Length: 117
Image (cartoon, rainbow, N blue to C red; front, side):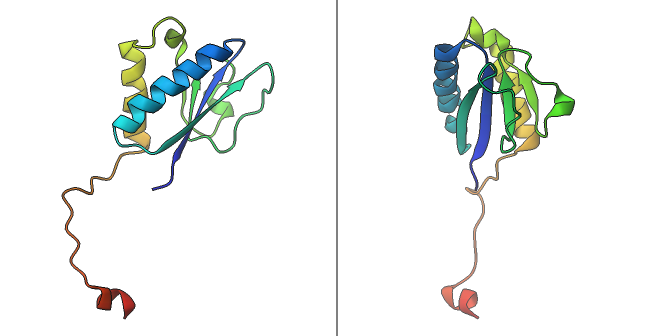
């Protein structure tokens, strides 16, 4: 499974973006997702990241029609990292667009010889 690329977009809230990144990384990987989270200050670059699978905005930098991936407003994280509605919104979005494949109940019935043939 390829890692999902999540981009946090903010302004002059640099330390807070790092705190949010670290917190979300723990929450999301605990659910089984393989992710890479980075951040972007809109004041340093206003270019839409072409490789992002999900963009989380702390400030209204982009419009959904301008990006190729889901774009969510996570401004409540500026005050409260445990903002339940925002966390639920992120996980609902991940489950909708990037559902996890459950491998624990799958039994593979093949042998090495079958793979070589």
